[in-house]
Amino acid sequence: MTTFPEPNSSTTSSVEQYYTSPVPMQANNNTSYAIVTRNLIRQFDQKWAVNNLNLTVQAGEFFGFLGPNGAGKSTTIKMMVGLLRPSSGNIWVGGIDVWQDPLKARALMGVLPEYLNLYERLSGREFITFSGHMYGVPEADILKRTEELLQILDLANDADKLIVDYSVGMRKKVALAAAIIHRPQVLFLDEPFEGIDPVSSRVIRDILQDLTHRGTTIFFSSHIMEVVERLCTRVGIINQGVLVAEGTLQELRERASGNGGDKDATLEDIFLNVIGVRNENHNLSWLD
Ligand SMILES: Nc1ncnc2c1ncn2[C@@H]1O[C@H](COP(=O)(O)OP(=O)(O)OP(=O)(O)O)[C@@H](O)[C@H]1O
Image 1 (cartoon, protein in one colour):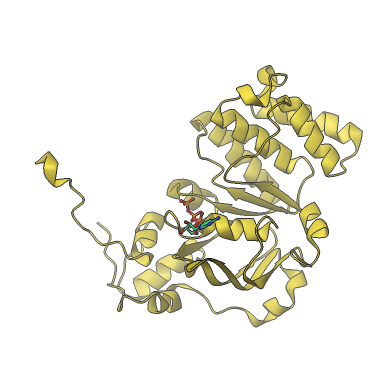
Image 2: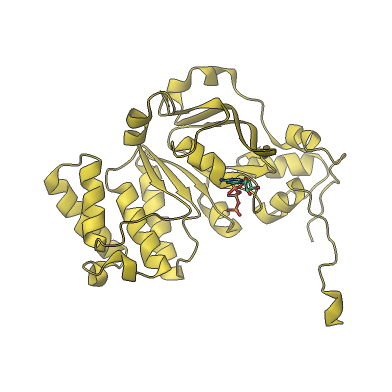
């Protein structure tokens, strides 16, 4: 069992100080980063879903965004991609202020949202092609890329079936194809591996890695620690709307071990520690 130091107080600020890096000052020059958020806040009535988030993601990074249920991951991604207006603060993607120049910013992005809002009466092939047209991809490229995406995502046999008749995993794969057909500079994925079988999961991982090797920046949220550990160059952990840890896995391990924790800690160990989960009894009393 991995041991960690007790967070020395119940406030998030001490944990936050310990696990997050200072905000780089040069991030004010937002053009040199793939994604920058500054003092990003989103409130829903009295609830602070995202509380003063400062994040900087370099071009070509594979950034994993983690947090327990309700932590603020989807809210953050929705604000980053222009689907949900922040209460305050700014977001730049590829140097473009997302809320000042949304169309220009959207042209740089690919988005796989948490809840897929697909055109149910289109077939898979039609939907991917439609997305290519929306992003202004040349016709010949659309045809070639669509067929290749259908093939590689194992959708070719169902390409002419209506999306309304697709399974959860098939819908996710067709949405991913539509999100990458224009070779986006920055790809946002909210839980891309949810509902995906191991074979498709492997294919998607390979596609995503290939994209980052060719310069695409990926920002994705996931609850699957092994996948994040395997794929991500850097991770951020959000809890109750506050960024409580951020860095490479190695940095997070070193910070944990520097404070008496385990130098071989897994991402799951680090995650449970920074969100303050203790070894408690989780048995149901009425099963005794
Ligand atoms: N439209 C909304 N109206 C009111 N509250 C909302 C709304 N959207 C999100 N919230 C609240 O904001 C908080 C953050 O939600 P969010 O969906 O961002 O969490 P999450 O980290 O993506 O969670 P999960 O891992 O369960 O998907 C939650 O308390 C949620 O109830």
